[in-house]
Length: 305
Image (cartoon, rainbow, N blue to C red; front, side, top):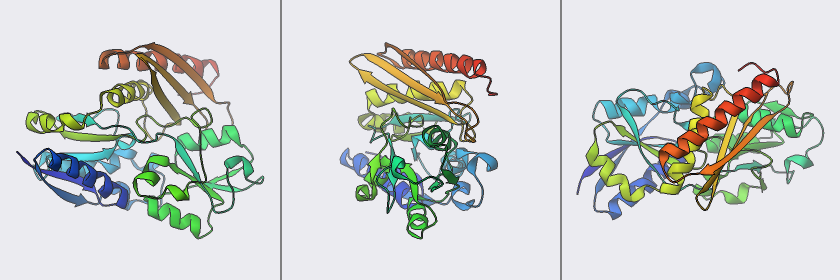
């Protein structure tokens, strides 16, 4: 039995995720406490993440707590974890994925297709902007920052005709009834790692890694390893309009990737590849191959990476 401290952001969703990990570790006999923290990403709400340092702003303070020994592990939404971790840190565990899709939330309109011309959609994700532009170039897209509850409140205050959120977060917080419809991945390809929880530790913490083994979900680990490899090769961050989503059929893994233009001036560029994948190296290799194919397609289309 060990006593572990989990570093977590203090948003309601982040605390739910940390509490979920806490309960699972306690079931395996460990004592667990939470260390709630406010990150720079939570504090800077008036500018797009792509302009102030990216999603790494959500993890830096948590990594500092790990480095200083105030915490033993940090729980993240995996899509918020940078593709390259700083030296001395490791992604120790990826848990079974929740629904990876994007959700449409609106008080009036059942789907994005139902919106009248010129209606306002809220999102600050460059990926979602590019995909919405590809589906409905006639719509107006406005920035939407803040935690899940803040975003929903802004919608309810009438600032948008509809907003796009991760289905996983809404479901985890018992807010699935707010979802008017879910975008199929053929309509709106998810971000790498979307819907999965990742647990970060200091390198060399074999005791924590061993304790986390019962929580690790191997199929999800392989899927997100492939997706994150696409993003890593592309230089992926929230300043990049990139989507990558992988699915298993038996031992065969298929990755779809898309590169878009948030301004809607260029057509969406997509690519897909399939291979037999039974280990992390094969998953990463497939992801890298997809990324190189996407890079070639982007250049051929005349986009600047």
